[in-house]
Structures are given as structure tokens and as C-alpha cells.
Length: 187
Image 1 (cartoon, rainbow, N blue to C red):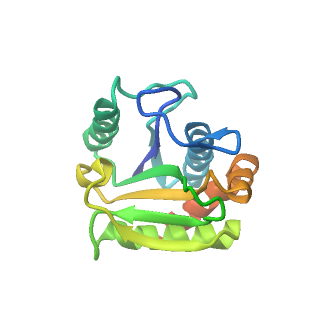
Image 2: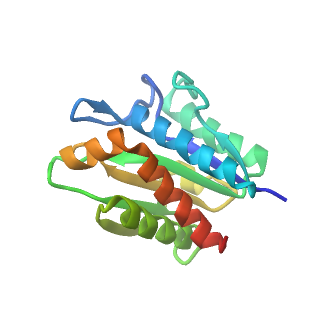
């Protein structure tokens, strides 16, 4: 039976719930592309069934911040996804801030361990620093999902190097997340 992965490409094309901006780039555009690349890798594997929160670049999820988040969670829960992976770019007032980090609702947990594998592989594939796993109990998509959920901050959109890598080589980030999933599942 196929493993069901719900890929949440964080944020919407326009407000409400548009993402961070930096270096002339928009978070929602970067994570849309990386999500599509990740979905293609998972589908090609044959062991996975995949759904995306934003199947097209102009898919608008919800009509407010609240409905945007609840819709993503409700879709994953209704589908009975096995795993929920939310893709984001980070932002900082410090343009030197660089690397990938991720969040889970609790530690220890399946999600925390999955996130550790994703971060290890992201760092191996992209060369960006692994900033580590963190627990965040206040993030709706981690708190309300019925399956292990990881929110991945792929890199800093406010860092010129991270931003260029995410926008010019999105396949590297998709490959890192994909390899982390495989490593976690022992596939």
C-alpha cells in the first residue's frame, strides 16, 4: 500500500497568508516549485501517493490566514495522509543567517526523527548548514494534523546565497527532503 505524503507548500500566491520576501524573491513561489519537484520524485518512486496544498502556481488556499491553515490541515486529515511536510523559507534581519532548520510538535516523536533525517540530507545535498530540529507547539499545522508533521525552513530568503540556491536549483532542496524521507522510512 502506498505511503501517503501531503506536501504543504507554505503560504499563498497573494495575501491572505503570503510569505516572506527577500533578494527580489517570494517565499510562496520558491516553495511552490520545490513542492512540485518533491512530488515528482515521490511519485516516480512508486511507493508513494502524493497530494499538494497548491497543485497550481495560482492555487489560493483559504480566504484568511485562519482558513488557509485550517484548509491545509483538514485536507491532509481527510485524506488520511501518513505524513505532512510543510515547506517554507526562513527570513531574518541578519542577512548572514543561513541554513535549514525544521520544527515538530514534540520530542521524542516520529515527526522529530523524520525532520532530523530531512535536515541531514538537505545539508548533504545543498551544502547549507543544518541548524537543527526544534519543538514548536504553537504552529497550527503541527498541532492539528492527525499524522506526523514537519515544518521545514529550507533556507533563508534574506540571505543572498541561500536565496539564489533555492531559486536557481530547487531540485537540490527537493532531493534533500526526498532523501530524508527515504532514509527515515528505510527505503
